Image (cartoon, rainbow, N blue to C red; front, side, top):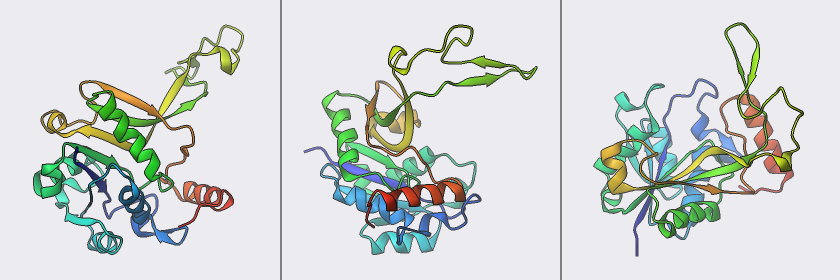
Length: 229
């Protein structure tokens, strides 16, 4: 059976929401939601939290994940998530033994175990290098030119506005789940390489926790929808 390691990057610094990754969301530290979803996924063999922050690593252990201390030079605002995943692969035995690594974002606390399984399974069944979660979107996107005028990106504004059902289907990366073939990811160093497969998650929530307003909106939605901690 394929071995799959889930890596959850969770650095200590957060300018938008201070202490975000251990701030209680629905009464539980934010990082714990990702840990619980990963531990509940049938496809996941090991769960590792990578952080520069000892408080986050303590919460990780409390909720059943392995804790990996991340160096400061790959923990700042400019550090990529890929650098944290590559570090985990180089330092953690479970990651080194894995065939697939799954990168999960803390900022999507409503991600479910079933959604993780769906993405991991799609990568394996379609023999893809990368599988990632997406949601269908229907937005009309605009680019603002240097002179201040708008230019339609995914639509022709000079023509009558199309109905949603008449437009090509378009999808947005949720940023929540990426399943990567480890042996291909390590030399490439980026999450998209080779053959990449979008996996549509119809019930995924499109709000990431980047600002206090995001937090209020998502927590209010979660409570109204009956989500439990």
